[in-house]
Image 1 (cartoon, rainbow, N blue to C red):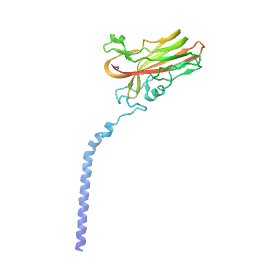
Image 2 (image 1 turned 90 degrees about the vertical axis):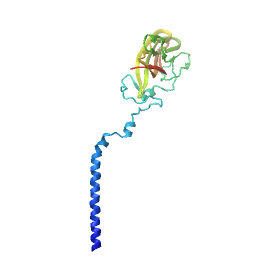
Image 3 (image 1 turned 180 degrees about the horizontal axis):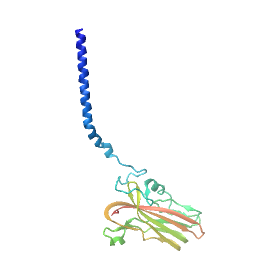
Image 4 (image 1 turned 180 degrees about the vertical axis):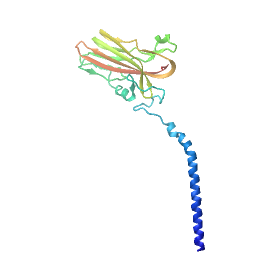
Length: 229
């Protein structure tokens, strides 16, 4: 009987001690829980949105960059117009070509074709009137025949974390009865000297002597000391 009482008393002490310990732990948790809840985890701090389709060299996430507008292109949208297709269009009915960086023309069967040569994106000499200069280009559409009409539209973008943000354009030029159209108007002044990657997208449409219309697009890009707001 005495042994049984001793075990019973010991069990009672263990239960009492365990209860006291649990109460202490509970009280401690109640004390520190608010502080823990108020402190973000390292994963939350380190994580940042990733744009779908962003290339490896895309700019890092920047909360200060505005969301894409109707004139901008997300990386997914930019990919849709950045294929390896030819930038030449011919007098075949509804001739079209997607945006590409190539500028090698492909001659049509009858020799009637036009090709876009974007030229370079660079710091324009004409930007000397601005404190930090200006960027732009002289894109051209060259045809193998005298065209009924050539129309060329150019837009300037800069790369941001979610895609291409338009910074200037559209610049549109049209001529009639010519075999070449060159633009000198695409230009954007620099607001500072931050390194920025610019992309110039050129879209051209031409009406051939046969009356058929073709269209094509091409782009060129460069990283320049020219920041824009």
